[in-house]
Length: 55
Image (cartoon, rainbow, N blue to C red; front, side):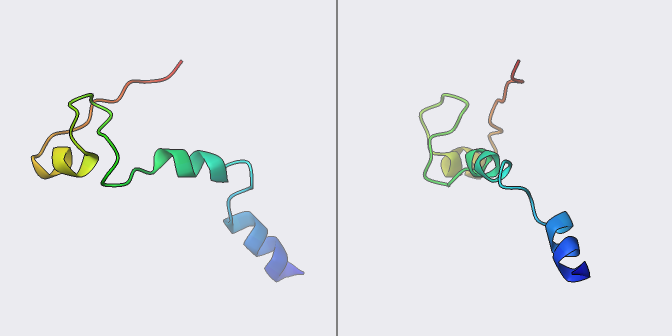
């Protein structure tokens, strides 16, 4: 019973799992800066993607 409680405390809830998936980027995804390059290419050139804070 204690092991189950410990695992539940350490693992993210099901509500946060979809959010985690949206935050991760693949290297072949377009860069969010709008340059038209892939995320990998922008990072390789030392370019930092511009991010905006949400409302």
